[in-house]
Image 1 (spheres, helix red, strand yellow):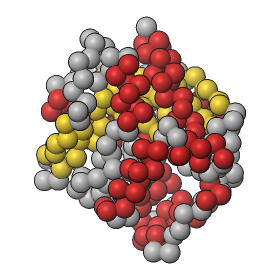
Image 2 (image 1 turned 60 degrees about the vertical axis):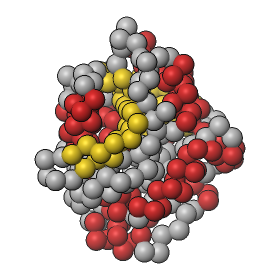
Image 3 (image 1 turned 135 degrees about the vertical axis):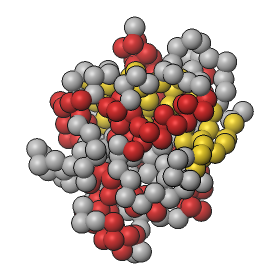
Length: 277
């Protein structure tokens, strides 16, 4: 059973948060950072994998998603404070952060800015900070949203008015995952439509501009999981993350795309827990 609740923030807003309240071991809780767009509720395959390992799962909806208050202009770094606010309410003092797709950068934020709280990180198909070190857009089937975001929030909001899903972003393995073990992901994306486009718009602007921290400031161990066939966040992003993070392991799954790479979640939990010793 998932306990869902609102966490009040100093600015008067709230974060909609979720807690599995599992009987966990003495180890850290697992914080799930959702993709773009989703509601922020933890997905059943994540809950099942965590429960099998005695892990308590917490999550929250980023601003403008899933019942959380809007915060236009937020950067990736702001996720560190948001996660800390949720952890404080729950009395949690040690976290392993796991973020998929758009959740990846936000999982890294806590490790960069709250190393006392976030002890290790897993990113799955996580985008890298905007850089000139490689062609950031190369290999993306539909980079239009991010290109618009790089020009500012107004440009990204204008793009959203005519934006349509491009089915070529997903490979056959992705569609198989959405019809099988990760069907809950597609359902949750559908539910997120009720909250509008602002969360996705603000995510994209945050990704395409300064994150508010540097990758080389992260001392915690990071497992970077990347699909070799990913056409949403191409393999060069995973390689760049692993190269820039001081204590990272890159796990490339050559036959996975953007969604099917999530099949790695159970083993990724094992690997990152092993990193902690």
